[in-house]
Amino acid sequence: MRKIAVVLFNLGGPDSPEAVRPFLFNLFNDPAIIGLPNPLRWLLAKLISKRRAPKARDIYARIGGSSPLLANTQAQARALEAALADLGEVRCFTAMRYWHPMTEGAVAAVKQFGPDRVVLLPLYPQYSTTTTGSSKKIWDEIAAKRGLTAQTSFACCYPVQPGFVAAVAGATAQHYAEAAKHGKPRVWFSAQGLPKKIVAAGDPYQAQVEKTAAAVIAKLGIADLDSVVCYQSRVGPLEWIGPATEDEIARAGRDKVPVVVVPLAFVSEHSETLVELDIEYREKAAHDGVPHYERVPTASTDPAFIAGLAEIVRALASGKPRACADAGQARLCPASFGKCPLSVS
Image (cartoon, rainbow, N blue to C red; front, side, top):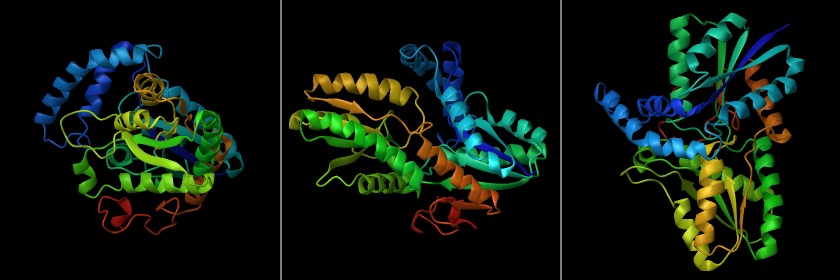
């Protein structure tokens, strides 16, 4: 019987109010987030995490004091194990980037399991150096240090994977029908934002987000769909990719159109969906005169999404070292995106 370890990469989130500040420090001390050399990055991460911790604790207090991301990820892991049971002994492990269970523990657990093959599966459908790239880099470093030598395959991205697209489109259709009772809806495909300079340096994230939106729109098949791809969670002084979701709220208020918010780059519920989208943006929408506000849930454990992830694992467990899940060994991204991991063979 084959033994397959599937490692789910995710961001992580604080599991208590006391964990908020060290979680933020780990985030801002990541060179993929702040590119300064040490000790400057370490000092800046200390300063930012201290300043941002009180506000962040208030955010998490609105959803019980901690992040639900780990519980969501564990539910996805169990669902994926069940979908892959016919492959042999398949076990899913969680490697969070900024809070427990972190990569160090995941590498140790996988090594103890003794798999024939390891499949690295990010819970980020669209590739970015700041998310999947960062998780893969730290995994490779720790796995080499700890002597984990099992054959390893890597799914770099799956922005138009049919199961993922079907899950998002199916949920969107339901909420669109509800919003349509209040007029012709506008669909916001809202994704986590990035500073423009990261995208300008060759990061394919924004292009892949737009590919996901286009695939969902095609799946929906709604004639003359009013839609926009927008970006949330903008912080700091840098110029970010846009349009900003907050700005789209004001525009929808001026146009007096109901809105359907689709969290396009998140596949699990966490503070950006449960607080930013469900509470803060909903309140702003009401203030700005948006007549109706619908928020589509993340793909989570939707059967179509889990089946899509299982399809990716099956392909990589068969022997491919790494691939775009949507393009075989070919690049999904144009060659101009030099930060795409497939640009380096």
